Image (tube, rainbow, N blue to C red; front, side, top):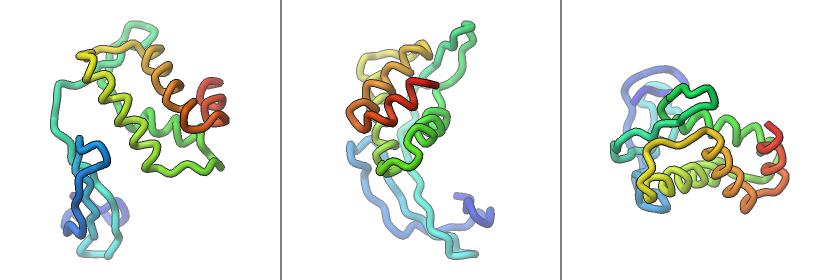
Length: 130
């Protein structure tokens, strides 16, 4: 695993445990070069989820795009990154449990809003306005 700070490819696992819903393994790693500690998640590879955009274009589901939107919506709010990761996990698991492998971007946005409303109303409004 490449260190996000220095780019060195050698790191060691300091701690390993299942994530909250046991769908992934959370690993704390330490770079052997600079000593920087970072977290990685190991997930089972499954059939990719496809997002159908408004113009009909299809692209693979990207957790990072949702995370970027959630981070912007939760700026200066008392919400931890782990909570946002769990929100994305819940959405992804909901889709897989329903047997859905293609989802419209509007429907995906509605799912994010539904989960965000339970988490923080201000972040819900911020996310909905975008």
